[in-house]
Length: 253
Ligand code: 13P
Image (cartoon, rainbow, N blue to C red; front, side):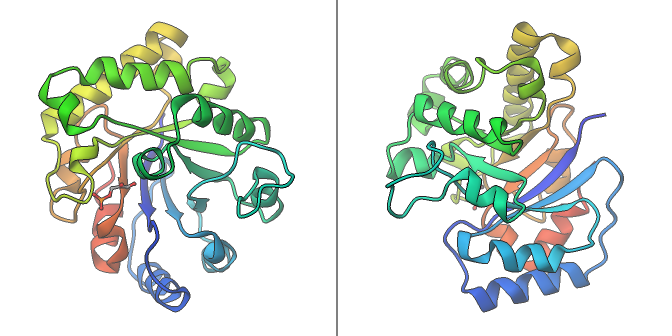
């Protein structure tokens, strides 16, 4: 049974103290996590250890880094390696976020190298894909996302792809308050699952969690998560508000 996941992406928001307070508030609220449901907090690097300490002993709750570099170690001032993350016990890393692609020129090849180094070190990548508005307007989103999958993921072995989480985040829906409709989300998630099935077979495709990201809010999460191929969400803005994120966690199916 594939995992249903509520993943918070704090991006470059909150001070350390605000982050602590937010986690305290979320953890104090009643959440009803089933065996197949996970919560992942993707926090800024300086807060990773603090977040891990807060989640210590919480079943089905994990901390993720928001990025890592594609090299093992060396003279790369300012970068963070997978070995560093591993040495503090991090198990998940968000990769290929559209903001990294846009502001830091990350391309599919570079992201595939980061995916490799994660999986080689037993860390689960949360691979983000999704099209910009002009692609959606020309109705070529399947080709666009298909290429992202082919160039960054489809070289993986079946065992490796099984360890990967995918997040579909249409760029036009990120931070805009303009969520994809349920139908748009379901269509793309089904397309992604179908591509995985063509490459790796149905059994593997059915095991992989595909999250939706882009203006997931407390008042729309349940509806989006109810779609057959939507296995939860990667949440930006609403994950910074304790009550809203708790509602989103409780909206998992
Ligand atoms: P918003 O939820 O703020 O639209 O951000 C989505 C996102 O980019 C999560 O990674």
